[in-house]
Image (cartoon, rainbow, N blue to C red):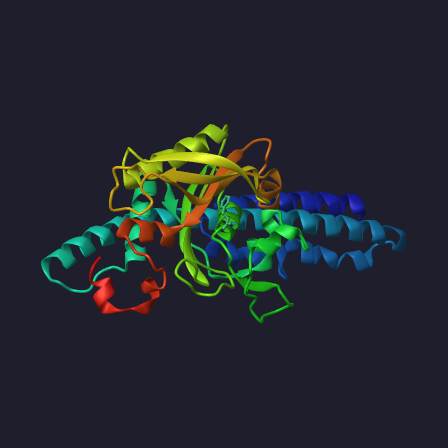
Length: 352
Ligand code: PHE
């Protein structure tokens, strides 16, 4: 066989592979084809054995042609697999949204009829936030609390040694390379996971526990809850971010509450802002009545983050925001000491 003939055979194989990739409808189905498309039993592997029978001078060229064909076909395979996984995740998320509302209404009527246990105040606050965002068309997504350094920092544009890492008093987990695994310090790694697993448009919120080394006192705990929002779409602007924040604060607390943004810095957003809410004077049993209070961070997704997550920043823009759920729950339920949430005292919990 000559290199030209080899090239032709590989071109024919490429067409066969493309056809098989298009026909596979699930990631499992595709994974079963892996061996025959790019593995030991594939045409490329078989063709490798003909190199030995070629003229000596032709062998390096043939080897190179085979390597290129292998890179090409395995790239096609990987992309299709990613695509199918993203599709499956999307479908699963859709199902979860439905489950969530079913659980909320079931729980409500259940606890009203018989005085059984009830949801923890932080869970109640989290579910209310999820409800508001679901009504705005967002999907709820979750990620693990033990994260890779890459998802928590690297992909979010905190290069190794970046001073912004010091803002997060990170708990590292003794696993793999030193400092490669950690307890997530914020919910932002779920942004990375979401962008890597599904194509835009993306409208998601990610609630969950986060960890930072902190001494427990009335306003700090080493474990706390955040909710993260991420929007990625064509033509998203800073005004969309400001409007979204204002809408959900009004939906949660009422139309008299106001919001404002102040310039700030986060490595993964540019421009970045801090957002505050104004508690109206009429909220007489709220100790913050008449005051602006700090709520969380937000900004436009940094192009470096899009690039790390395989999204083209000249095609898409987006915003993200994140804030603590515990502080909101303290405000909503009039609780002065954060530690109350963790005592598990039934007399405390029964009040909510
Ligand atoms: N992750 C940031 C923090 O915990 C908050 C944030 C989220 C800021 C999204 C901007 C955008 O400090």
